[in-house]
Length: 103
Length: 167
Image (cartoon, rainbow over all chains, first blue to last red):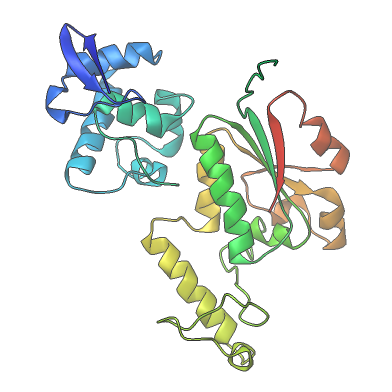
């Protein structure tokens, strides 16, 4: 557990860098986390972040397949938006817990 | 004592030589999981594993209902081997297993290959097995990158942090 100042606000993070208080999330915080991950957020990113936050809020499991069928992006575009480990990075930036899915 | 430096996994090659649902999906889930983690991933299908990338067979994979000690009836009762040998039982059980997997959001084989390649993973077929089963690249799913030899395969496995897994 650590507290870090991002976009001028102090944010609670767990050991892996995921936010622990969803209420602290703002678009600016997302942009700051993204910069640390080497990603510059575009409108498309924010659209997907909205999708992810809604999905998690309704208690659904996040999978690459599910995001590929979200209507926002397909799987290939998802990998392009968040290169490397897309599901981990996208959830970290979206201020939701690390996904527990294997697919 | 010298401090050992940890080398993270950078590249993985998964070899699948069998056609049963569990063998193929072990390779696909591990392969897709590696792609998701940003690990360079290659899948190599050989012998009966070719069923998993052959258009005609890939979405109709079976699990063995005879000679499979893990097989149970719904509810956990033992599954008599004699029953598993009856016509249609293996097909029925396999269809049920595939539909259970679909419910868990596990994609069918063709879509799984597409997910893996969408993230930069590569799918290969074994040349020797292709010759044996008289298959050509046209018989295989479009996501299969190439038909390669064992030599080609080892050439791809260079670099530190590379692992080969045989499922």
